[in-house]
Image 1 (cartoon, rainbow, N blue to C red):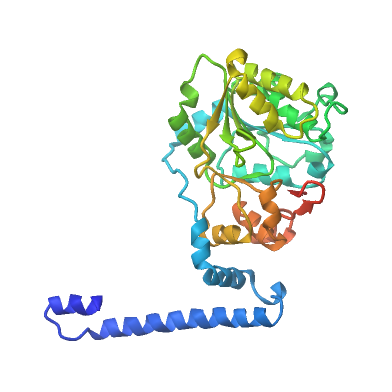
Image 2: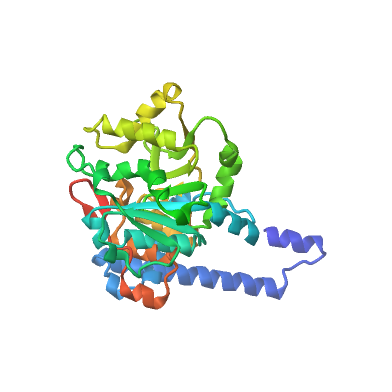
Length: 373
């Protein structure tokens, strides 16, 4: 009807031949897509879908087509994109470093650390210093990374083996020692700002763009006076205030906050979550003279919740700056096939890298219902 109105206004009594042909072609395309989807659907109704007989692309297209209304609810907002000059990038990488910790046999035997750093270098476009604290043998990561990745061996006296009821806390405690370890490396003396990431996070967009947007909103690099630490608000706000998977620290002023946080961890050895100690610091921030600043998650950080969301992200090639997926309760809803495909796309792997199947294979840890390597 709208087409005819347009033609009538121009004095035409019938739509031109080109319009009729275009409409006919559109009908044929829609019919073809519907036919292909229904063919796959019919085969999946008669028996479980055999992934080996259907190409991953066809399977994803079918799932998007058959669930498009539901999937549309999961589309995240567009990440913040601001133009960053080469000189601005160089300045950022000169005074900023990424800090990571990798502990335990599962981490040493897996590739979570490699995935995280690869995502930083590729989609994160971060070429600066990366400091890794680990208990793995030095030869484990020898020759694995570029020269800007600095591997530091954890000191035995800092690993409180028998102090905590939850084994993971003795490792998470190293988040509070980041500045101390950095001070032992002369190569890192120029660093003023530290961005900590859990190694089960993938970086899906230019890192400096996110850092710049956070600074603009929270004046992170303009704050002086009260020592501050910045973290995203926890996805479970009823229980925890902040989540320590991403932390922004100032080399010169945040150490007081880290000391206070470490003390809170040490005096609560029976707590299974480092977030509980963060709550303690927040509740006593006036006496501690330390400010724990909560960052709104917005679209900076996502916790993909099941196959549907990941399939949509794969299809749209729309990656958030930070994607926290592996060792999270949300990841248990993701099938291994979708997980591996998703990780390969975020890491922008080429065909030969994909054929190695080195990245993205995870299983649910039975005792914690979390994904681990």
